[in-house]
Length: 100
Length: 184
Image 1 (spheres, chains in turn blue, purple):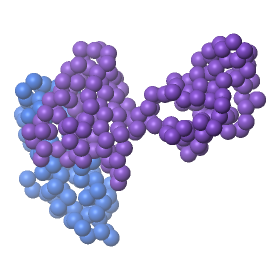
Image 2 (cartoon, each protein chain N blue to C red):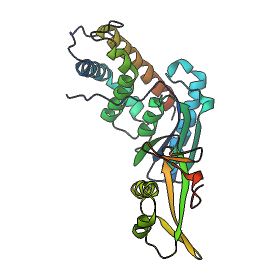
Image 3 (cartoon, each protein chain N blue to C red):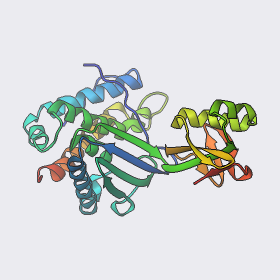
Image 4 (cartoon, rainbow over the protein chains, first blue to last red):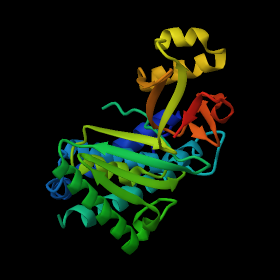
């Protein structure tokens, strides 16, 4: 999983880029998403949006500290963290729902 | 594709949070309740899979009719729970409360007065409370008490009553200092 190196101009733009990155990541493994969704009442698109919402909530603070004047993280680090968190959430859902 | 900035809840202090999800029928609510129990069990086995400030033994799950209730003391780390409530079945609604309370608020007034007429004889603090209660809970139930009557409101939602005082959007009303007011 490789994070984008696009230069970010604002917090909203960074969040938007992260959401796009997560969306692409989920799209790259549709079969995995479909297997989980088969056990749920939501469609694949809604499921992906819910996952992205969870992940963005999880990196929201980090994203705030990745933009000037803060230097605690770089936008790339936050994107890497978002991808790792996404993987963790998908693994959680596989444990919870694939056995239904 | 347009993405909007999402809500963000976790804060620096913790509260008792209550999530109440309503589903189309009791069977669906029971299915969601069982999924929540499964998630709590998964938290025990895979604690590293969750980013919460609470543990599975701190949470309470119940269901009544077509509603599922999840309660926990947290600074707002509820994403895993909210996601489950939305994924396992399509909810009609999900309400989130802080320091959830179900209380009955009563005021005794002379018999025969309508609520509007009663507000004319109340002091300004009482009038303020009645305005809030009508806005939050609707019109009161009227109970005949012989020579007087009671206006009664049932309230369910974020905590508004503590240590004998109603706190209504920053306006404080000490119920325990009023002989004609009560909260149960």
